[in-house]
Image 1 (cartoon, one colour):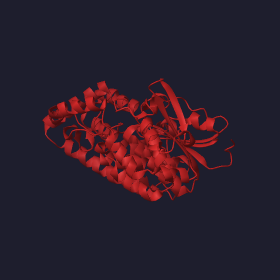
Image 2 (image 1 turned 45 degrees about the vertical axis):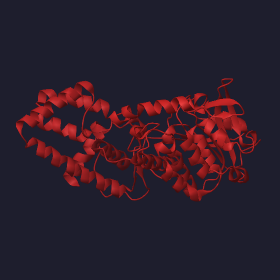
Image 3 (image 1 turned 135 degrees about the horizontal axis):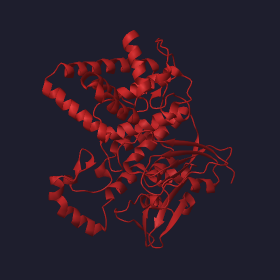
Image 4 (image 1 turned 30 degrees about the horizontal axis):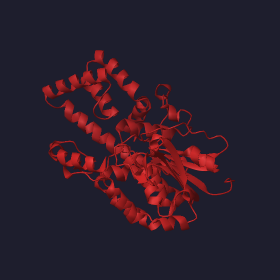
Length: 413
């Protein structure tokens, strides 16, 4: 099977609620007009693969809005708080109800997930779309993996096999033809080799850093775009709406950057004019994070370092000017906070000194790197500067370059 001249095969990793990232990836691919002929996934990646293989784009936003913890598993209300799994006092009170459900279903009840899939995935649409679909699951009866494509799934069983691929350990095990199944991530969380064995040589991988077996991807003999979430955030059962929105947007932005449509290493910046701000780099500030050591665009490097030390929001599509403006605004805010602290009560200053010294020992600082560095300058005795500054520099390789840019901005901006 020769796939050199076809569209891409999209390989979708497992990772629970973090699978929302895949839909951000898909949005970017659609915008760029990149043709995808096949979808191969594990766990949540298999569910998204099934959704996308229908080639019905009008339902995706509605599907995203329907995702919540209680749309995946049936839990007593005390175990859910703001979309997250809760183990507080209310959960303790509802524990007997949960235990009865666990015994009755031999695991967590996933009937809500089944209903969600029935509402948004139509097997006939998948079979008639002309798209290829592949999933991975594990047969508990034989303890062997099953790598299955659409033609391997009996008529009327596609939803069953999608559920089998996403049967996270602890969930009720789906039973198909008398055999129990468990999550495909136990065998292979990123089913790249499965796609290669199918004959695909043009592949896009969406890696969300999920649990399970993540084997090294071997690219040789292929054209592979590897998209990986660039910010470590959330966990596999985090269904908070803000997290879902941000992580989907991250998938979109990571994809655009992977395909060279936007610039940046830690931020996402549209191509365009750089703000008029001239400064001359000097050797002492020339240490950059390793990701950008060889980047020739000095404005990009220094602006990103400055944004990092100020902890400017990263999950947003910037223009050079809007990032520059955000840096100036945050710089003023941080300096105002520092001024208020320095002019404040002596007890508050002493408490801040104590916190800084403890932070230097643990490596855990509160507040932005810029704020901490400036506080060190303002309130610590010179004899204590070096140890605390070096602790900050070890944690934040962007610190020197970012500080230099901000110093020049304060002088000339």
